[in-house]
Image: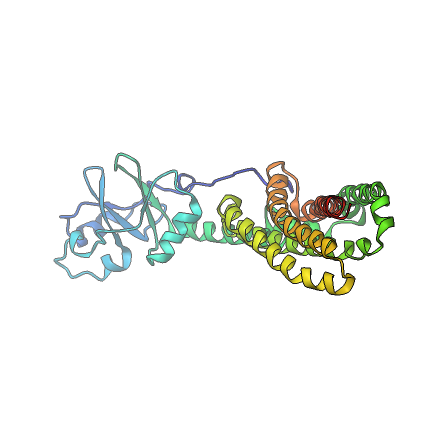
Amino acid sequence: MTDTPPVDRIDTVSEHVSARVPLARPEQLVSDVLDAMRGVRFDSVAAVAVLADDRLVGVASMEQMIGAPVAATVADVMDAAPTVVAPDTDQEHAAWQAVQHSDATVAVVDDAGRFRGLIPPRRLLDVLLTEHDEDLARLGGFLASVESARRTSFESVTRRLWHRMPWLVVGLVGATLSAVLMSAFEAQLSTSVAIAYFVPGIVYLADAVGTQTETLAIRGLSVGVGIRRVIVPESMTGLLVGVLLGGMTLPLVVLLTGDWMLAIAVAITLLAASTIATVVALALPWLLHRLGMDPAFGSGPLATVVQDLLSLAIYLGAVTVLLT
């Protein structure tokens, strides 16, 4: 087993379906069906699939069969609307359907309506445990499994350095580029030292907005919510956060410096940086995951570098335009 999660892996119910299950016709007596089951080996006897030709018309649980009156037919005790899925249905969806309908088994029927088998209770339990394992791993570290997360927690110092240092070196390069970027605007900074006052605050707020979004994205992915479903509302949220932060900052900067142009530059930067930080925080975990890398180590440092550089570039560009 590797630490690299498979990309776009979908486990379907076809891996869990079994055709070696008790079968019956609706008109058969329950007692006859139970007698016919004696001495026959099945993968599961939790339920009886009720067929008309090769079409599923119902499912009768073993509790219903055993508790039926002597003269009852299978049609009298079967569930005529059981949980039914297609062979290519995602396994987690099938297990969720069984839980929602309180069914011990799930029937599998192909596109033509032909019965393919039942998913036994123990396989549904395996699916629930596996999916729970993956969800917890993703929520905690976005790794492929809890076992991978455990290995990461107990790995040697050398392995820890190997996982972390490349991303931190990227951060060091980003810090160097930030210094180069600041030096390129030395003329603007020399005209007003107040310009430098707001650099730490702008960088911090951009990182904070991005961190919030990144946390929500990982939580969503852990429960099967894709980035595409949250990118629009989360981007709009980032935009509105920028508007609110810029609006609150504008009078404060004027009060501190008495410079309306500098205040507008700071407000515009917060608006743009918050929006961009949100998009970056959504894109990087998704991109690293698609590339087979572990976002638990890479997305945070890389997002910080990108957000810091963009925030500085926007701020110094706004200052150049408005204050010269």
